[in-house]
Image 1: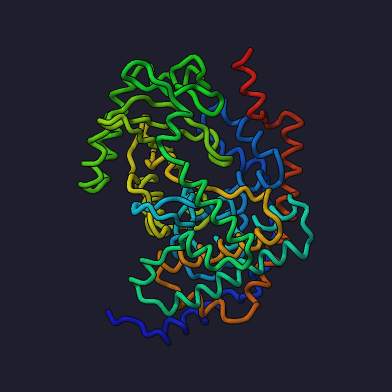
Image 2: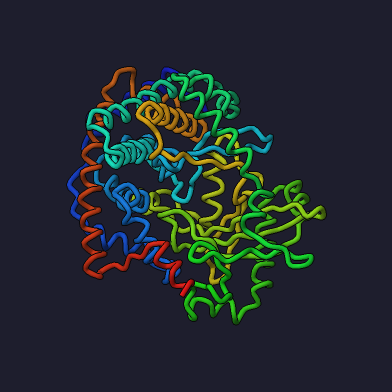
Length: 470
């Protein structure tokens, strides 16, 4: 097959404007849907007693509500015309799903770090999720309308400029490009920005498996046991479990150890030979259920504590992989295994991925993926940011998203040609983000009303933790 020339690819990108004008991305569309029904659908088949905690975490603010409602925005994006430029996208690229972590070479990088919704979709769906999150967060922080719009313009123009640069890169250059904390410090526009990067590097250095062991587990002779801290952490068959009797039945009737061994064997088959050899040096000590995030609350997530012959720990996370909301509303190719979808999507979009990524099928045919629980991982506490730091963070997110899309798709030339050099696309997304933030606030009010009326049960972490102290 004859390879397309750069000129042909640029023409293809510009031709996509006929399918969807850049100015058309301002539209939110006519949204005739019941947010509560969609939310209930996304809560189906979760751990029953944790669904109220999910709603409790979402009820804190419009911003936490937004984080837990990827299903709503995916539905809404499917109601308006898209660019037709499709590629592997993160699917939930809001500003809290970026962060720092260590590469296998122990270099600290900043990248996308949540891929539960990864799928093939229009490139701008990721940008619309990011830009809407910036406006919702800015309003939560009581920033002005102008400041919120500026954050969106900053993120999208950075995406545009970086994509234009990536359009000039060879395939290997793109594959090797990493946004390291050292590069972040060099490109930070203010002294405070550089200080924030350095503080982040120091904090990341302390977030290791050994540091986590002291906080989470205790030694009983030769064996380590993870301490229960309900509702966030508990043994499924222990006194503090939040599983119902019906939900624990599969664990009680089946041999839990045998179920885990079967999963483990399947997981190892998805790993390269050297990773399997590395894992053979570790023995399992304990396994607990961990409640994670906002949108993921109630999905099955287990933490496995292992130690090597020197007693050094490794915490692995087995997280349930449910069908992507992007695939649900944008007819992407089907996936045989949702865990494999997450892992392969992460490997394509990230500059460097966890060496322990893999997947397996668990009890009752549920799909899971594996990764390290914590390895120099960092997330931003944006509520402590001033406007300059927030603007720097928005710029960084735009850069990361451009790098991820360019690497995963090989379509930097087409996307760059579609966006062009002016501000038309960024201005359209600024209009979209403001209008969609209005929609989020309306949906949040409907959600709170449903919680107050008893249609949905919402409980806080503190409220649920009190149940165990009585």
